[in-house]
Image (cartoon, rainbow, N blue to C red; front, side, top):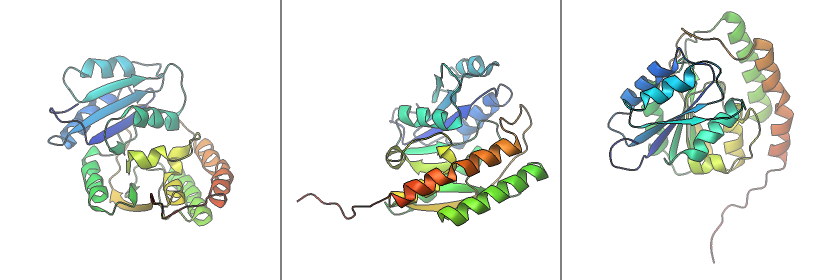
Length: 243
């Protein structure tokens, strides 16, 4: 935890076999949020490389760093939820653990959320000039287009790992695997507003993607019917007041 103040912002980073990227990413996050009361939570999803030991060794030099370890691999969405559950801040920032999200973009999204109305619960990043293969970009564009049309979630790029949201709002959402791809739709379902902002994207310089294009596309599309079902069953009681 930075400074003597309780953290206002908790940065949650799910990692799995990211020994080559995690140390530099942790340092970049600490630099980006210097001067802000924050904590950094890396959630190791049962990595089989040196990710966990590297992160633990960094704790002495980065006081805000916390390392949470899964006993068994449970996937990115569960790692995000583990981090949010353990977080102390009212605002959550998530970034992918491969270093492709630029932490320098995150404070701007935090500011947009903080300056927005109380009903604004999420500000998502939309990657510009994506540094991925053509095949990966095409698969992502297809999945995003279908999802946006069917869910009307206003999002052009739910695959961007850089998102900023209110912890309280996230904890209201129904949890399921791959929920991280559907946060805008589920926030809207709960009556919140969402917004988006352009962010940078960097090439992967170490490690390997955890999904093939077909796996990513299938995961994105196979959950659509479930989220559509949840949306059809949504009934909001607003306004709510104590009498």
